[in-house]
Image 1 (cartoon, rainbow, N blue to C red):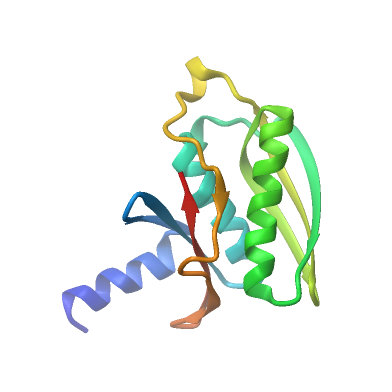
Image 2: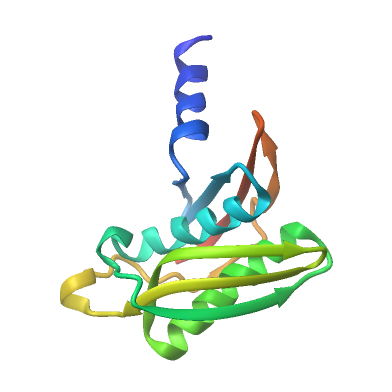
Length: 150
């Protein structure tokens, strides 16, 4: 195993999510031992673009249900539904739970009202896109990724 392979292995096995640069936007990638876990970690990756999720206390819970004809599209629906709730209720989230059955996702997100002094927002995520959209497995783990418009 060369240095690049060992680094990739570390990311896949030890870190639940990552972000990556993409032109004027930002890519997000969630890893997991299950499809649901990768979707939850993709949500955490998305919110890590907005704020330091370590500073967001899981005080309020919101339930979200979405559906889509394919699991790739389900990821975009999930992320955009979270952003809609954030926008309407002025919340940021740090903890997520996901259940997927067929073409339907039932999720929960925990967070708190956005406090500019406490959370120090970085950038606004306008939406999850279909660009670089991929949901699958890599080295035995699930990966859920897309590019978010900032």
